[in-house]
Amino acid sequence: MSRFALLFLLACTRGPAPEQRTVLQAAFPITPPVVAVELPAPPPDYDTTEWTELVRLDSSIALELRYATTDNFMERKIYDCGRCFYRPRVARALAAAQREFTARGLGLKLYDCYRPGPYQQRLWDVLPDARYVANPKRGSLHSRGAAADLTLINLDTGVEVDMGTPYDFFGEAAYTTTTDLPADVLQNRAILQDVLVRHGFATIRTEWWHFNFTGPRYPLSDWTWDCGE
Image (cartoon, rainbow, N blue to C red; front, top):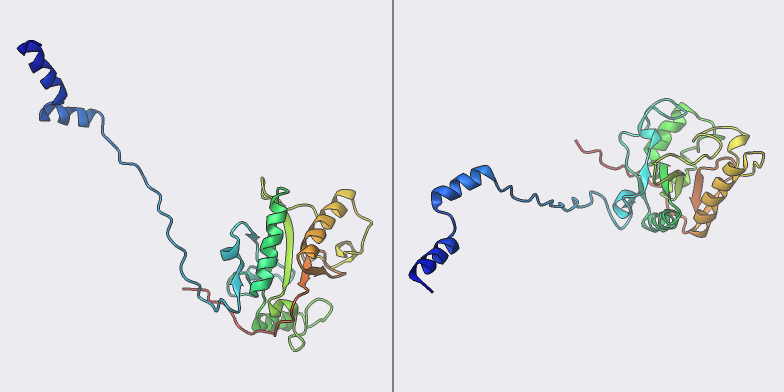
């Protein structure tokens, strides 16, 4: 190889001169890649031996906690803020049902979960009628962390499945025993009930959305969750 060819090769392998690199960097700036860092969830602010926050167990379950808003049959806010808690065994049963619904393209939406005793008292103070609200002295399975008010949504659209009536509708059209309804409504209710019953829940006659866990009878609880700042 000639001396000229060798010098040419050395020049090529050394890369551009510093002033040339500056020009190239200005013309073609290198943007460092953005790396998404998933921060760990803060530690639970409750006794995990007694309670499970449902979204920590399965974040795919939708929440629309009506009593933390004024969008409920009492038209007033009952809960200081909306969080959904259950006894751990009940929460695991709901998560198992969610996995089964997901395979069908459906998902759970919770309207009401654990209802602390003081909040049950607020409901009773507004409507002291045992046909619609459990007397706090007797208690409700909601106040034991073992009852759920819920419906199904289409996972692709997030739209609620047609159950024939809205949540907290008081009338025979909401009864689980009513059969004079469109075929698709009856089918949707049957799907909801079938899956939840197989995961340990039972229906009640007057509300298609209400399910009681049939496991241990937990004690009534006055514990209320933290709303933060």
